[in-house]
Image (cartoon, rainbow, N blue to C red; front, side, top):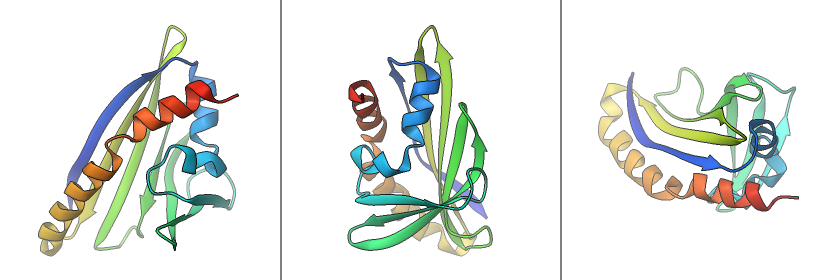
Length: 144
């Protein structure tokens, strides 16, 4: 398996980390800031293995939380561990004097024979997700 980084981004949100974490993990509100997500709901207990089912483009899809460190970070994965192609969204929160730096890394893990497909997917994801953290900050800073 090889890993391609499609996007690395970071932004400062002018809220404390606990509040940013609460908004980041409010999955029902994900459509307010996640590009292309029309609806999202949770299946299973909070933590690694929890399934996030979402609708995008009229199709139901699924992420699984592979890591979950409350208040600090999480990784959402589409595709099984043994899949030939999977996408990983990693979020990391870092506190700084009442604000929070949010980092996003979108990566693609693929079998070597799917390298060309992974490159195309990486380009498409970079374009689609480029404004995600700005949307999260706008949502978070306006949320009640």
